[in-house]
Length: 210
Image 1 (tube, helix red, strand yellow):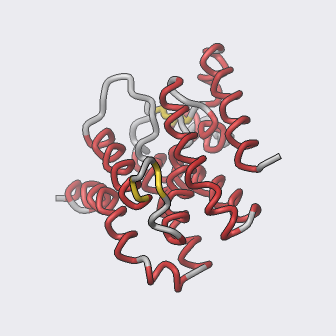
Image 2 (spheres, one colour):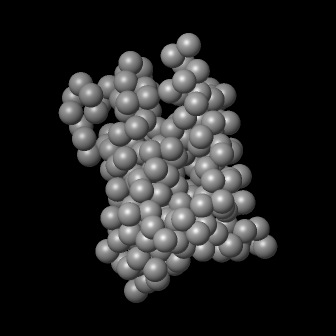
């Protein structure tokens, strides 16, 4: 069976179970206090297979579906798993760093993993089309929405918007290290897609220190 379909199916099953079982959802979602103080490190990975609602799940899985095949075709199945899982972990580690003084902070979603796959795919083919929208434009919109939601948090929003930055960084670094010539030739498109993330980095690392 197609690796991409297996990942999507596993995520859908676990997410749906989380919709129905509150205690399961609470046990495996990302939570700063649980990771830092109770050493429940499994949450760094398990939260990537939980989602806030059906729309959140569908949006992430559709994005993964449209860009995942390019990554598998050009990097291989093992690399796809490394990028996807690595991006979830790095995205959550960045979230842990960003919210380290807010023990109550919780988040869920495959956003970090999807961001890593999205960036790796655009390194290879910036014009992968989603409903006639080039991949790098879709990526800029995807990240723009996430950055807006992170900077303007909504009450009871458990979606891991902060994970986008860490996940995207891991996917980009992996792709650049693997196919640097492609990254250089598509640098313009990567730069356009990265504009929201660069703005987020400015908000986090520059503006907050002033």
